[in-house]
Image (cartoon, rainbow, N blue to C red; front, side, top):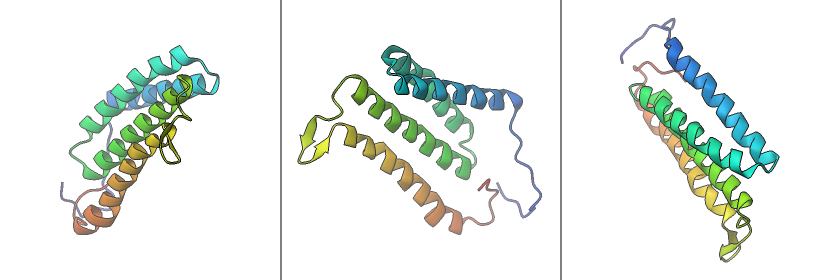
Length: 135
């Protein structure tokens, strides 16, 4: 999308905004359940939280800035959910190798999110200044 208009608007359809807001509700319930050790609720909330996150990323796929941030959010939620599950199932401190525990494997999606944002900010954005970007 090409634009030089600094006053351009990024409009989100109301149905998309409602879904994004509902996504926050599911995410909060997942993390509250984690905090309170409500294992069944926490694990159950992974499904709608991840599903909506993936849908949001898919719907924003035409705007690279939005897509990269939404994919980073999706991998963040996956890392967060994995970490939560390792604690719920009592395997978080099991050694995988060396000093690395099962919980530390959550770093893989966390780092993936950082790499996606690094790609966007360090490579893509500087090379596509003419495109409409939300960030």
